[in-house]
Length: 484
Image 1 (cartoon, rainbow, N blue to C red):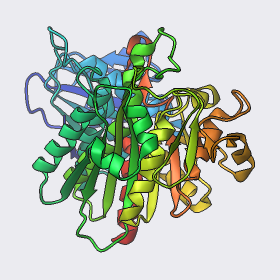
Image 2 (cartoon, rainbow, N blue to C red):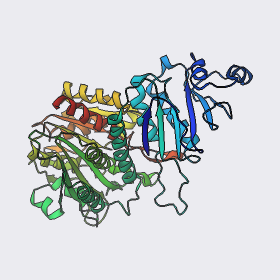
Image 3 (cartoon, one colour):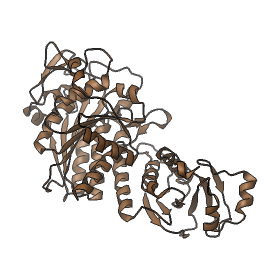
Image 4 (cartoon, rainbow, N blue to C red):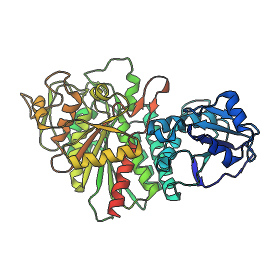
């Protein structure tokens, strides 16, 4: 979907729809701007208060456009990002099946929120019907934003569109069924992306023999239970730049049965989303390629399928990781940290400036934070502040949880250097998972994002969200601006 920004409205097609956002404290502004006939009479007749998402059709009342309406945003002075998202959803729902293009006058929204609102619109316009025999009848192709004063410009809209395409890719991959989206498929998507952007992107795919030769036995402990071989995929964006890269590491468990520690059957279909961390890395790299930001970034994906079989790892098995540390695998359903720990060791070869791993890692994080906020874990206060700033700017929010040495003893094993789950039952499950990863990241600056609660929705609106692509892109944009 294309976005434009203009200072005034002009009717371009007879099918176009004009939506005028209205501040509850200044309804009359729309009257003077658009010369709306009898607005006071209409407002009094229907008792229009411009409450949040309250709509007032203006058929034949606006001289420039027959298809038009006022949409309330409540009090602009109290407008928050969560309300912006709801307004965007309402606008898209009302128009995406009816019009090819619409115009939205956003003058009532504070100018500093225009960029975020544009991003909200692209997120609300997503749909997925790849495997439906009858496709969704979405016709909306373009949104023309109108504001006399705005912070938006063509460069910012290009960024929004790049993020949209990256986030949509992440959502498409997350929504793709596991009989299609397996480790080799993720590798194929990375190779295809490099073919699309050969001047800025280099992809390397490690197959299982190469993974074994590197001593990545924790990774192989997960992948060997499946007939689908695992893959370690790296995507180097602008590797020619003489700067230490940001490295993004994504958990790509394309389906998670739990292995021998089998999950309950109810809701297991949603375990196709266990690769959403990897999907967000691919989506972020796509967005970077489109945005052409001058910054060195590496994406690394640990892609495996966790299945029970005669070859699967047993609870109590011990493996030696690439780092040389030994792990007692007490629960094969704590597999994400196993594929990640070897990948986090592998990426040291890139001499990273900072590493962020993204993983649908623990149900405990959902218990702690629900579905609104991603869990942020890092021992680095400055890095935590950077990530939190980007999270607020993109409204892809996080909440910091502790990753401190006091919890490390919960991972002690009598038989190996470390157990892959805590030894105190369900206590602090997301924290001990982060502490496990920390043991493999002490040689560089590192943060961990647990997106188990935010990477997808359940229920009637089931589907991947593409988070945290907006957060990761904003983090990279902020760094690129500092470097530039």
